[in-house]
Length: 193
Image (cartoon, rainbow, N blue to C red):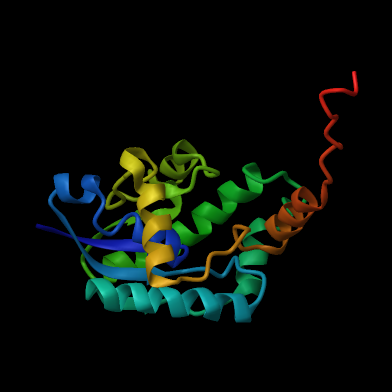
C-alpha cells in the first residue's frame, strides 16, 4: 500500500474520501488527515471544524495533523482577488495555498497526497488538479465521483458533525449570506392566471 496524506477541509467532506473507492482501488492507505484551513474567516471556525476532523480521525483510527491557523498569510496569498466570484481566481489561489501546505507536510512524512476539496459539488476538480500539478507527489482523485459527497454527508449526519453552509473565507461567507437572503418570488395559486 502507498502512504497517503489526505488534506482535509472539513470532516463532512473528508468522511466521503477516507474509504472512497478510488482510495481502495489505487491501493492507498490514508496515513494522516492533514487539516490545513487558514482560509477560514476566524480562529473559532477553524477550531470548530478541527474538532470534527479530530473525531473523524478517531473514528477511522487515522492520526490528524493540524497546520497552524494563519489567516494573515492566506489573505496575502489571495490579495487583489478578494472581489472575484466564488469559484474564480481567488479560489484557485486558495487551492494553491492549501495544497502547498499539504505538499510540504506530505514530503515530511514521505507520503503522496490528495485533497478532500474535490468532493464538493461546488468546487472544480479540474482547477484543483491544475494546482496539484505543481507537485510530483500529488494524486488527482476526484472524490465527488462514485457518491463521495453523499457518503460524506451521511457519515456527518451519523456522527453528528458540524456542517457549515459556506466554504470558509469571509468572501464565501458573504456570498452564502447573500444567496440565503434572496426571497423567492411569491407562488401564484393555480386560480390566479
